[in-house]
Length: 176
Length: 70
Image (cartoon, rainbow over all chains, first blue to last red; front, side):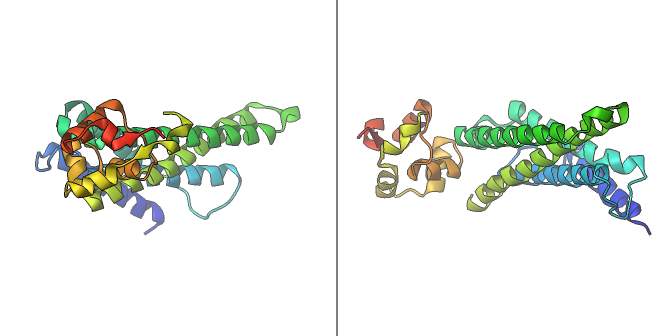
């Protein structure tokens, strides 16, 4: 079995289980700190994994294996899409009292700080990426590469910050 | 929230303990996360007017009993 099969299997099982959990009605819809931790943490890991892979690929590093199945590439995207949809729905439709604690003002401040850090790091990253380009031999391929690198770098940074942010939810769930 | 909030005198921890509440219990009655209560007690975060009033109501005191300017 090659690695694509395992990545495909894990991704497909994960997305299927997640969709089943929501659609079957067997799971309590209310978001808790633990649920939000799991969703955000896994979404962050997916971002880190795929953005890291793309960055290594664009840098010319040969890490020995390639994702060849389109399904594998779609599965994490679907997970992130479903997770963000679920969190957004819970924000507007969930229990007001519980949401007051889940989305309280200190959490908002943590979020702003995390986002500000992400934008700062991305600003430096984009500056570096622009600086290392070979502008004298500029062509469409280099332009394409640069755009991919910017996107992958931003995804990597925000993936890492998502994971960091989610740890706060984990600590909160333990203390509750 | 200004940068000088470190100078704000904060009596939350003492009042909470004298009232016999844990951070978790206070956070539930004030409808915030426990981290918020912890951050306020440690002077990391200054609460909004609404939250300060909610905490004061739970502890049966005034906002001025909880927070004072030096």
